[in-house]
Length: 87
Image (cartoon, rainbow, N blue to C red; front, side, top):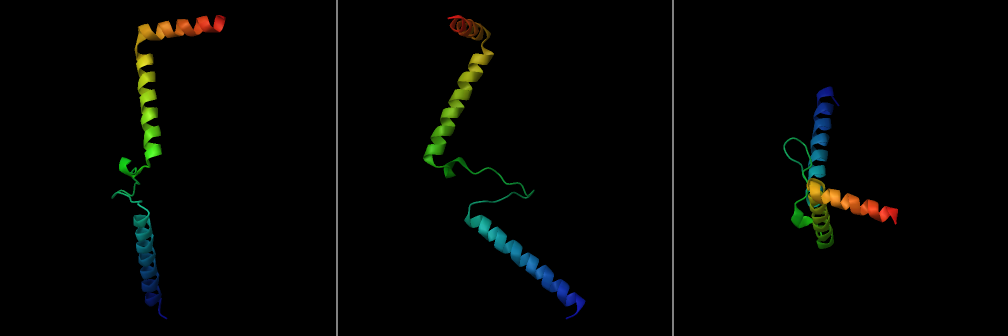
């Protein structure tokens, strides 16, 4: 076998392996963009329990952001927490 035949076979094997890998990833729903980055899965692909938990967590974050950003309310909550600690 000549040197160039070996090079052609190696390149063909590498291309074949890449095709098989991409086919497997496509079957699993995994894909990547042109830059090679793996984008997040669309929300529709999440199971209902995970989607519900994600929505609950987002709502909790919204409430916490509201508490932190509202100075008057945060002062009263801080005072209430301190009064509970004293008891």
